[in-house]
Image (spheres, rainbow, N blue to C red):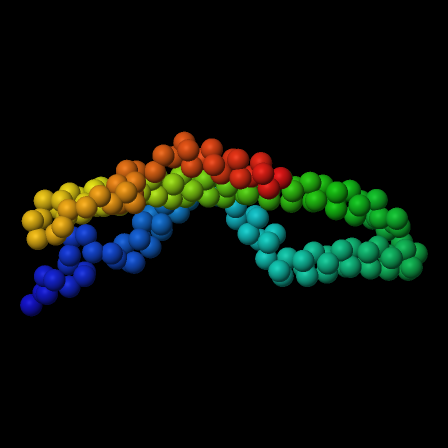
Length: 180
């Protein structure tokens, strides 16, 4: 028999799994919106960010230098003799490519962070409005209940109105200016 009062079956019960599912959906939607090119860039950035990549890159540079020095030592013409101009060119091009890959990936991650921040802001404003309504209803209930002495509660009256987001934003800006 299913317990209809268990948190899992209550229609408005707080459910951490539901919250986690919602954030997972946000990430999945962001991932699905990526073009094939963006997915390839993300994959390459993941490879470059792998700690083993530094070791493999160092090994490749060492082998390149050693092979060219060994070729010159045995009297053959090396592909890239010292000062290793080809190696320098590959390093410069590789560095530019890494910067471009990382910046492209970071820009995409910033978009996800911006969406998340907007969602948090919208939920915060919505919660502020709901809390104000609950306080307003509690105050109305207190006034309507003959068993409770009627009194004026200025703090409850102030809290029953939603926050003025423009005033809050202006106060934040002023605080930042004062601290600068």
